[in-house]
Image (cartoon, rainbow, N blue to C red; front, side, top):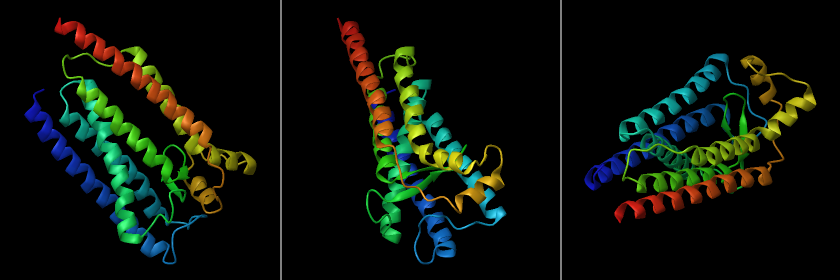
Length: 238
């Protein structure tokens, strides 16, 4: 993978991800104009069944598009993975950038947002997904700097990434799952029940300690991966 190819790929995938961020924010602008004319907040307004299901499918389509972009950008699995998380990070950050420009929202870094709906709703202060996105961009940069061979991630590099990601995921769904437990509601594989629960749910307790623990696990794993790759590269140059 030569430098010219890398620069071209970086340019076009960056533009693609920023454009996706704008499209995502544009959809939110339309939805909030219809359902939240006085400003977005919790508890959520009930969406019609057709629009709610369309929103769910839009999330799936967004992830598929990001995976496709990563696949087309790389030649080997770890490079495709790197481009995928790079695109994801850029897309997510610019989604909030454009919402701020278009709606002057969020009001603060700690404003709560509904982040995702699969497999259950993810919620958290806006700062949390932005930190996660910056971590993904950093991880992509570290992987893409190692272009000397075709090796995939070793297990000891994957383990902290997967573990940290699971911990971060738990931090995003924690408050909502506690709410479901308190209300004795089961929403798994029950889309209508999930819709009904969201129109009563008000998030108020994001587990920053859990989130930051997940971030730390990933960053320590990333540092170890970087050191290992550098040693291997230096060994090959002698």
